[in-house]
Image 1 (spheres, rainbow, N blue to C red):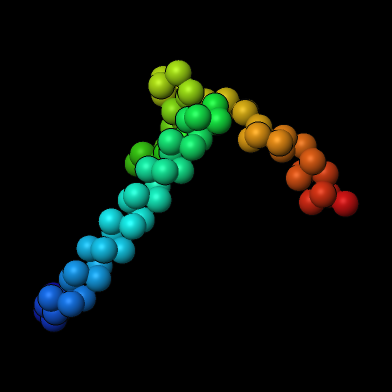
Image 2: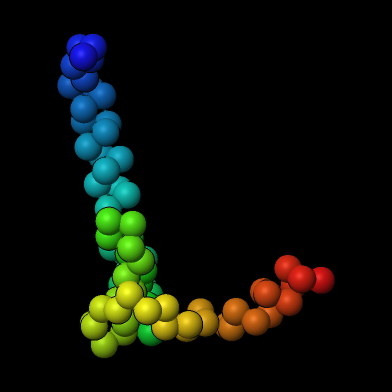
Length: 79
């Protein structure tokens, strides 16, 4: 196996900050989805799981349209 050079302290701090920013953004998106009643979707070992607004988990697609409806966007794609 090839040895990889160690990260400098500056690069390590940058990577840690980017990870923190990404995690905070994901948490905000999850909270917003929960408030809007939209299921959060996760992939666990390649299997999709939906967290429903009541907090339960399912592997069956609940078929929920996002706020504003999905039908209008689908029609635009087909046109």
